[in-house]
Length: 110
Image (cartoon, rainbow, N blue to C red; front, top):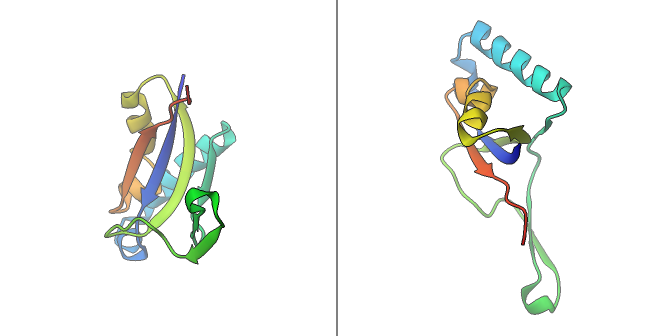
């Protein structure tokens, strides 16, 4: 099994215009994933951390990356293939509620 980092993007407007039964099914899907051991959470406020040339740590509130939609949450899932990982996240709230989910294969460092 390969681990995948998933990043969900979505906003309240997209969530609100999604049929409640679709949202409920997506939340039930997330609950099953968490019950099966998926590490999942809602994104809190980010902090950028720098320590250029190891000369001193500086921090700055806010995201470094930018997107048309805000980051809503993260998960680390296991799947047998990228196609299986895509299938898993295709039923999550961000995917069904007019958002998007990125799926990143998590590769072990050499």
